[in-house]
Length: 229
Image 1 (cartoon, one colour):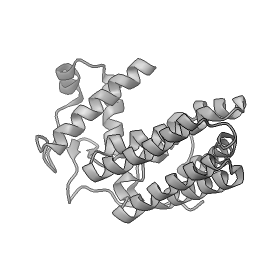
Image 2: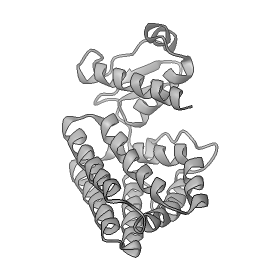
Image 3: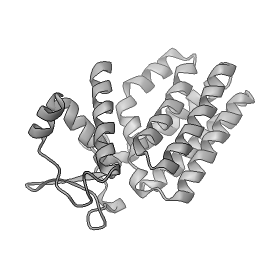
């Protein structure tokens, strides 16, 4: 699983670079999955995951019977057109609800156990998020966000809570990617400030403050995706 994820992430970054460099232009139809799979020597599964990630981030859009296109002014999705890829399993609201419950408690637990090195890593991840957003690197921005939340989960000593987080990680991570196409500059600034507040509460060993900061952050992220929780 880890190898496949690594292949997917590398391929997603390669394709994002094509868009950022203008080799794939707005509204342009991209090559077929078969062509891309052969061109990059990857499985169709890894390719589909990479394309789904880019679509969630708002960089491409797939239309039935037409193909996949780079997004542009005519193809950007509205909030009411959000494509939640796990709708057959759980609603988007359900996943945000469980995120608040689980990650709030994880943050509270981490406040009593995180080492100085781990806390420094939280601050570094937040800095990386901010820089990636400024650079227009959406994959790096989300990657730093995922790392921030995963580091908190890994630091919690409640093994069952930590394992529950791991078992739901794909669903949770998708809710971190999903709001990106609708995130304005002010909202990203707010999100970064919320990450800093979570890290500060953990550093102060303030379990209640860390839990409240995490829940507030997830609630605002949900609102950005059009979900009120």
